[in-house]
Image 1 (cartoon, rainbow, N blue to C red):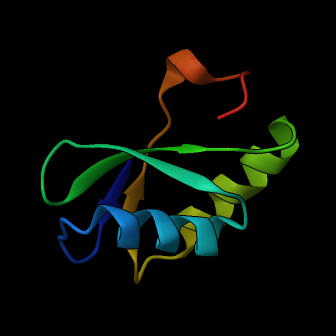
Image 2: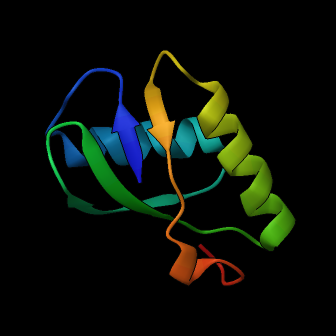
Length: 77
């Protein structure tokens, strides 16, 4: 889940920005609100996903918050 710094409904644009910042492919899931969006990251392994999440969390100009779905932890996200 990401909270956008600027609300948007552009699913393709959000997925593209998440992919660009995370450095791994992202698939758009659903919108919870114009601010919050659920996406899946496709990582080769858990360390790659951990690094992608760090990059997303550091991109404060794009994402105010990044939260993991705890049910997916340990699986390819």
